[in-house]
Length: 547
Image (cartoon, rainbow, N blue to C red; front, side, top):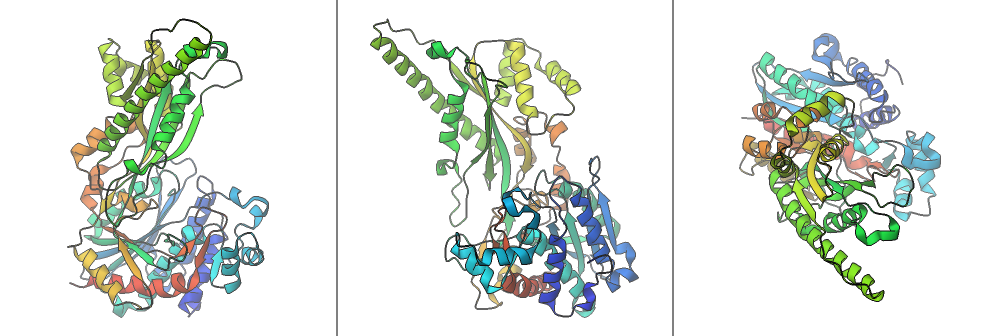
């Protein structure tokens, strides 16, 4: 299809959404590539074929992401209604993860028909084979996450433009780039949402995200609807040991051993999750662990770096940092004691005298580490300023590690240490009160919907989404405490917290349904996603517009 693709000529709604999903899947829009630009241009062409936008071309526009090297953009489309401020925001992202996981069929990753045929004879996974043979599933990168969600939003936008008698309020569609990485698309869009609010005197009643939902276990038939969003922080550990020759291995402290202990302590450990009954509260997961040796030698690794994806729900981030720091400190004390025991066992076998344990392994938060430097008489503020001036091109994930390493080199001590800090991205968590109109209307619509479907409402969308940036639960004081352990936060990830609070848009996720997101088996279930879901969202939209 090309710019002549006209969705209005397709009457059947399910067919409309499937055709549009296929069209969007066919355009590769992997995060961090020019494909994100290609996809937003395609979306703009499609939207401009709508009769309403031919009449009001100013109601479709794009927003360039300031400073983005690829020139990526967000896209907006507006359906205005005279005499009302109430505005429902449909939002979704259009970038995807990469294609490498498709392996030998990577070139077919955007071809739903090929993949359906491929999986129909895929004996290694009976579930996906059965799904492929039903004809009810659409395969391909982005089919589930979340180009089908884009298609549902656009189709509903078109539906209301064709049935203006049903439109009792304003409707704004927002498509965002860069969701699968740093969320810079939606962060930039906050300025645009604020501008529109002031220009047209809009009242944002609710944001409806169509990001995907999936079964939680084998045989799970529930459709999960979320009224709020989980948050996320990247919890980082700079680990410095005491290097030594492997021929004298007990003389040092191996940084990789410390990292291993921390990984075993935190990774997937339910002891560190919040206790929120009935909610899917996920533990931290290690996303990176590597020592900093750049070539082979027989010296133990002096520095190791690691970071975790840590979800947040209700607890402020600064409290999570403190909890992890205390637990790591206790475990590092056990490690040092164990190292002493092992060394003395070794010496005993050789009939050598025991040695006094002089090892120290200190654990700091980043804020505590800076205070430690200050106590040593080191002007860390000037050092940080120097580092910023000389390191403008560092990766957002590595900058904190490099800064701490730079500061530690100025001390030039022989102290083993762990420094806990944060790195981008930071997704704030937010939630909606069950007493609110947003929640009550959603509950009412679900109860009155198709009785054959088992809808389950949950408070926190668990997969991370752009909805995190539309409102924020943490107070300004709690955010400031968090930022004290986020090195270079104003350079790396300055967030417009005040704007989030001013907009304060409650966000729900009423998502497309499927399986295998972020895997090569990704697929969306058509009967629900293209049939039931669009009507459900329209019913909720109309309910929100009511007084």
